[in-house]
Length: 260
Image 1: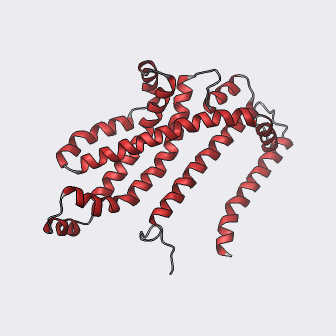
Image 2: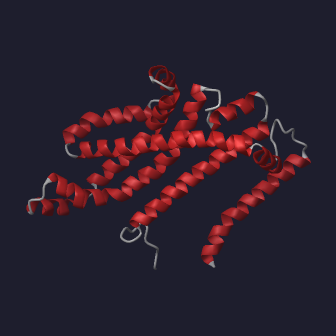
Image 3: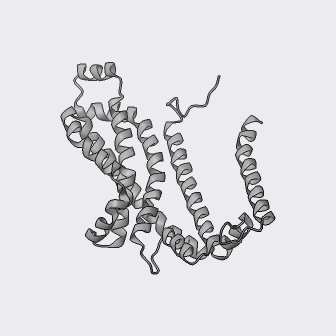
């Protein structure tokens, strides 16, 4: 019963919020070009769903490619840096620089330098999603218990054996946490990159549809696109959280249910 209430509480709160939103916009006769009601947004989403879903698919493709590149590159860089304190001190500042540099500031240059627009968008989204995986994986690789590392060394285990049997399992929960963060950031990066690129035509993502709707004062359509983006972000997080639970559920404290 408690679990059911925990799941129904957010849904009930959301429905109450939507009802208040709809009631206030109707009561005060708020113009639709200022703030449309939830029912009008749902109607617009139903009518324009095919076009918006096609645009969402393009944005999600950019997101997936950026997340894949960030995962592979982030894990590889973290493993390399974890092998030596000197290597870590030499490379980590550049990873920090990439993280703190606003992508909107360098996106125009990337778009100019890249061979095609899709590649430029992926690079921009990758920059946003890259650092959390590097930082989380690095922390996890260094979190392996010192006594166990000494034991591995005592028994003559090499770097690869220690990495495979001790440091990688210790880093897995940290990596998965970084992956969940980067999943949302890759979507944000893809949207920001599309905003900066401002590309039109048939192969346009959802961010361009938002810009287009704003320019034409089609605010219900703009909100419908935002609803799809929010739903996509939630779906990405839920999928990555499910992956984390599946990988950790049998042995890690963060995934085990509280039996107390």
